[in-house]
Length: 403
Image (spheres, helix red, strand yellow):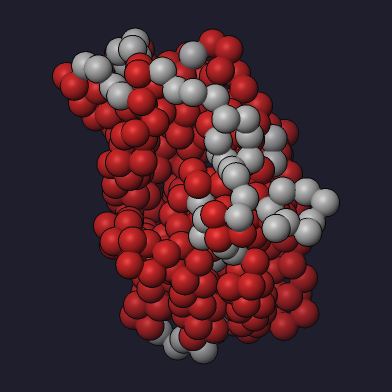
């Protein structure tokens, strides 16, 4: 029997916030803050910085393929804990790395751990929350991403100022220690299923209609999934170009100090706290197609402003637009897959489009790094990102009407 004054499902949400704070907020989004220090300390080129980001996403893409199998064998709690431990060990190893190849290998394994922890955490929403509460639960969990960005944006410049050229090493080591503690907490808090505690899922038990249980038009369903996958690929290929390189651009092209760039990056995290709830709710009212179009339009302006070189005001507006839309696409995609696939097929559909998303993340940073190495600036890469999201905005018009 439950002894807490609230449903244990909200403990699952809390553990999810901590997990996403670790596996994405710190392990992935602190990366952009640490690039200038790693570039200076190891003499890395822009292209190598791009390859590091791509290596991380290759590991993530691999984990997308294997995580469903591991969840069936070991259940989510063990997979989450293992993923977080993998991240902690590899980030600690990165703090001692002395070459590009060592960083590349370790950060690729970090990406694998991030995928294991992230996907397994989101899977917990289905058994612990009924459908009318799943959007809220998912929206709350992704707060961890924003908190991670805020935390890294404040902490890393302080460490860099305190330890100079070795600041990035101390940063990776401290982040590893934090994630290790959260891995222990996750092992203690996460329960695989409410039945393990004799509980029902959070939410009212409402009978499902046949239309909600099954998607009736296979051709339309397949077309919709491909379209959603392509849109998710466009998002994955562009949002991490900005996330990986905007801080480096601020320092090396705008002349910001690392502390000022860190403050800007922290604002990204703050604004992103609202993105999932704001645009998820908007898509409930105007439809998934309209919601996706609005978000891609906002992101296009964010990338154009980042590449424009128009000064601090334009960059601050870019940061606001990027932050306020940061987690909107994943939130809308989760709802859209449910609309098109029905409850019974939603998990398989989301797994399918996640491959597109991961592929986009894998290619985007590498291409951006090569472009920046050639032109000596990230502005062309930001302009390319804006072009891709503008095309995605128009492509969203082709989404069929769900049954």
